[in-house]
Length: 432
Image 1 (cartoon, rainbow, N blue to C red):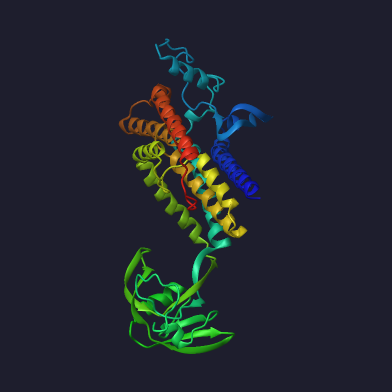
Image 2 (image 1 turned 120 degrees about the vertical axis):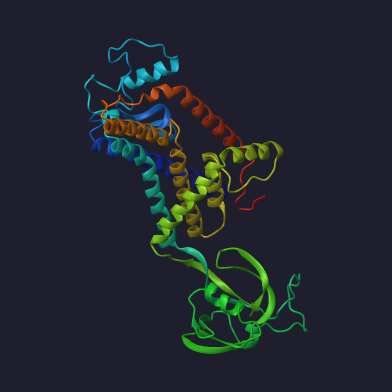
């Protein structure tokens, strides 16, 4: 069963990735068609075509390798000088090939249904449509996770009560006869009690109750609990003890604070609807930080791969790594809802990664096309302000050699991460 669950987890993540890519490309095609630009192809995957169908002027289909996708937009760049009847120039083979492929999408010299003839803002909208779709999908996924399923939180319901107060750093697992009783036990706190207020302050979370207790060592305070439907008031005197807790900023802290000795139940609590968007944008910042440090992180990944060192769980991983983690999560014995929650978190983070990576301002990524469009817009605006004739559109095919370098680096990065995820995978579940 574990093997079957692992395979199911991998397949679910692959399907989720395919849907994310399909929607990314849809984010490009919808505004392009809305602006009247011809779209020749809408393909999911790379390599040989498995299935396709012509619908109108666009061919829709699937290719053998579901690791990406693309659409063929007419006139991404202006036609080559040769296509316009100008004197033939000496270009590298790469540039010539790029020009030829681009020229094939332009039907005639006065063709207006091409991208390069559109207003700058329209070109930017078309190119940002894909990353924007990934952001929308991530917000939707995180909203389902946070507001539909909920986040694991410690509640005000008592799960267990410590019988005694053990010395800090003690390895004892049971209370000795001479160990002092815990304030919670002495006050009569019982498992199942729901704490409603502490020292006169209403509380709805364990964090709120715990914060008040920590601030009152040696002071008798009233703790009101709901026990079997009736309200009872208990008098509790927290003792001063060294305790580990998470402060208001989310940092783990060890300090001498008030301690009463009970543990809370943990359950999934549904969050406000805005939390999904908040989590998505938090992920954007985290992924952007990884992208900025990508060369260093890739070097560390390579070192760990060849030395067998433990990889940084917050470092970059490939599709193989994501699939492997999804399979391991699916194969655990945790409740199904917990496994679904982790899978949704992975898929949401994956969409944020797709968005941020595609915004890198280098061709052939979407961010590179945005830079070209903005450069065109700046040139047009400058010409208008200075009374000069409108300049020709920027010929991005001249950047093909640089684009090839970027593609080679991306292939090298992919190969490194594939190898690392196969031979030295990230251990998120503590499997060792």
